[in-house]
Length: 132
Image (tube, rainbow, N blue to C red):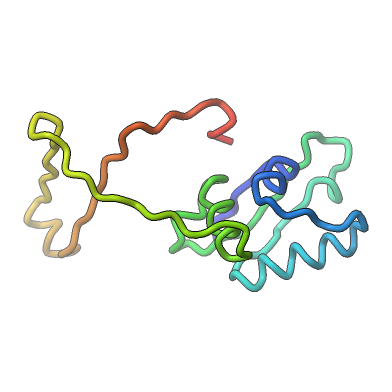
């Protein structure tokens, strides 16, 4: 399974969930949330390498869940799962003709993969902290 690394403090802050101050209780509660959602905590650097800061969590995610392969996707999914936020509602907007793109699928590819989907996301900005 792929593993995603996130900064622990930022992850918990954005998750909107406060865990107990007792490390063993924290571990059990967080592990339980991950397990119930089908994820697994691979490593907590606070326990394995306490000198290295900021502390990081390495979380195993299923290979078929591309939405969980980034910090934001993982936070969004877990916030929705534990009930601290609702699932987002996305809107399909057809852009003006001069801003539309076409995707061409080769015939030999369409025989192997008969379905194709894509999207162009506009108005998205990244900064250094977004790409951990």
